[in-house]
Length: 235
Image (cartoon, rainbow, N blue to C red; front, side, top):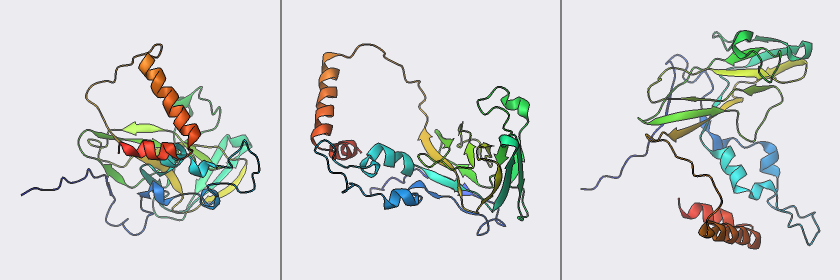
């Protein structure tokens, strides 16, 4: 008897008391911003023989980045005050668990954010991946928000089975902001680690590489939908 192989699974687990109370993770493809949903694939108002009117909605690399992996949302609503040009950040909440804490300035001395204090969103979900799998944590791709930016990181979630918290900088203008429960904090992209490093081959292209490059470029120019079919052919 043949058994169908089981797909690799990423598990998000929380304390029993938190289940059904804190916001749960969800697939990134379930979170597409309103502006993107409303954007037509082709802008019919564009009238030019040199412009097809195609929008980013037809850009598969853009869409793939947005829909890859999972989103971990804010567990409960947080109020955030940004003041003194972003150098002072205060947070508050009514929830019975700590939702935001702080890092020390010396930990990021000289970073591009200047004197903006490093803060940290507290996460209550433990992420477990199969052996050999890690997770990349990034700001939700192609979906910046005007209030904060999470610092990217990679964690070996096959061995580190404990909640991972998310450092961030408040980037908004001075004022008070309400970040609602369920607001997306980070995009989680699982990837399989390779036991051998990928060697780099850097130099001028070979004749066959040049031919492939030209063919792909011409196909893309001849048919805007060609990349979608080409990219999916090997999957």
